[in-house]
Length: 320
Ligand code: UT7
Image (tube, rainbow, N blue to C red):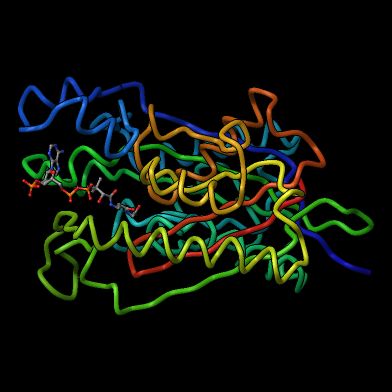
């Protein structure tokens, strides 16, 4: 009896406030043309002061539950992928569990920066296959705007806020579900992209520091390995991929991965233009976008990939 972790529903949430490149160029030495050409980003959504990682996650989770035709009572595992928790502890997942009215099972946060959702999906898949839970909510939610130095044009233009969620259920006798995941980290990249604050070091929150060129170079190379690696493990050819749902850090990075896979532009889900880099939220946001507009359908083979701080990177193959 083979257990599979099947996606039953997706949901997402974006804050109302939308900040364009033009808006940023009013107080920062940058331009719409530079940001578009180097990143493909044209706008980003920014959380209101009363919006938190938890509140956005709850909105996305409720939509995913509705799409799955389930209720909070059905959930017995909740994993929140985030690098921007509401508080240092308890886990923001605990807050979400309580607010949604989930009364059984367990909930925890998982941090792998921009690759957080890939790591959380892989964790959930393993737990479901061990029968530690039956039905899971996996959420990526980030308030990246709270970690930005708005004077640093090298990072301020790149990030946005938002949340995305999926409901996963362990099922037998199905071809659908997560086929497998590939996870990698290399701590040698630690200082190339990090937040210069934290409870055990500075006792401040800090802001994002990045050596963009170095991160870019590593992202392109490691993502190539991650997508080719997972296809090889599962003996799947590039032609079988219906959709690439990538982490939305930079359109040029995504284009390089799609080119390597021989995937035409129409098979790649792009949301970065209007959402920028929402870190662990970007993949579930993109997935929900393409499910809701009818592009991704039941039975389609989806390849997700992400690279980010750590360095941490990975890929997941899902039969929807
Ligand atoms: O999700 C986590 C992973 N993160 C990433 O994957 C990000 C990876 N890196 C990148 O996406 C790109 O490296 C950036 C978009 C951050 C930068 O693009 P780049 O082509 O690597 O530019 P650069 O850093 O080499 O900078 C080129 C020039 C510099 O000026 P000089 O030194 O050549 O005079 C920068 O100061 O562009 C300048 N610059 C800007 N100019 C206008 C940097 N940021 C800006 C800006 N507006 N916002």
